[in-house]
Amino acid sequence: MIKKILTYSFGEVLVKGLSFLAIPLYSSMILPEEYGALGFLNALIVFLPFIFTLYYLYAYVRFSIDVADDSLISTYIFMGLFLNIFYLLFALLLYFLVIENFEILLKYYLLAILSSAVMYIFQIMQFYHRSKGFAKKYLQYSIVYALSGLGLNFLLLYSFSDNVLAMLNSKLILSMIVSLSAYRVLKKYISWKKFDKNLMYDILKYSVPLVPGAIALLLFSSSDKLILVKYISKEELGIYTLAATMGLGMGYIGRAFFMGYQPLFYEKIADNKYAEIQEQFSKNVLMLLVAMIAILVVVYVGYKLIDDKYVEGMPIAISIALTYTLVTFSQLMELHLSYMKKSSYISYIYGFGGVVTVFTLLQVIPDFGTRGAVVVLFFTALMTSFLMYYMAQKVLYVRYNRLYLLLFYSTVVSLWYLFLIH
Image (tube, rainbow, N blue to C red; front, side, top):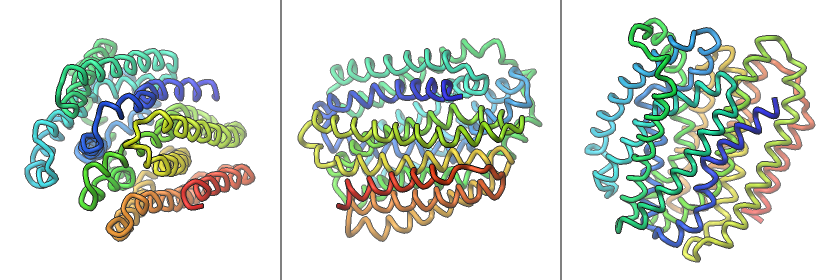
């Protein structure tokens, strides 16, 4: 179990980690105000697809237990095509209603939403590999993706005078390449005859109740930038965005933990192997803490290499890393609820956390700016993780070692106080 989790973790770190390590180079080439525009657009394309595609991808691993590959993949490919066309049309309408007021050029916005829509075939392939436990194959694709993206970014940055346009074009080109490659891998499973309308309805029945929770979780991760842009300069937002990117290294590792652990958790629970799940909880806590410490070291070293115009963001990066450690714990506990198909509970918890986050950010940011934002994010993540653990145990009880639970929370909170407050 640990081997697969570590393999997925390594793959996810490779996908994001090379870009993460390239940040010092980006900081010397991209101005803070340009980073601010990119940060705002990235926040949007993380947020919008979940709303307009109804969170359908989340259901793949759960349905892979019961449905044949050809039927599931065919349904997902055609369903994804329809939903992403819907996403593009409504995202474009949203631009003229709201987004253009933030002084974001239409060409930037179009490139951003197109790249996020085109990625869906590659994302389906990722879920396919996860559901099958093909960790090594997933790792191979991750390496190619990471290296291609990094090379393309720097090639276009040197070729374009507009750095924002260069980064967005790179993202779109890479999305097209990897999705075409994914189509070739999945092609043998894809047939219109295998498209199952009833399965599509079942998927949506499972995923739609999760949409409010997904929106709330994404509001937690993105609303800070969307609100900050109203109260601080693009330059300050750029400093904050780069810091958040550094701190999100923990978010990437956390996502890898979730990716690796999700199918294994479902398998062990279905086989009533509760003792193995109990033992794995303790190991997960230790791995999370080790990963967190490693990210904090990387953040510290990274800021020694980053251009001077960005260095004041280091406390923000550390706080974001610690915050996403709590988010990862919430997602691991979320598996109890998703396995029992209590998806509405997940939405209620993240929904409550998201509402509290946005309301509090709106009160705090005008007076305290970026520092206020990171304090709010940390405490709402802490609250949400408590609620998710409580509900997970209530719906599907597993006797976890509370000493490890205490170790986890005390370490995260102590480090946050040490670096940000003290």
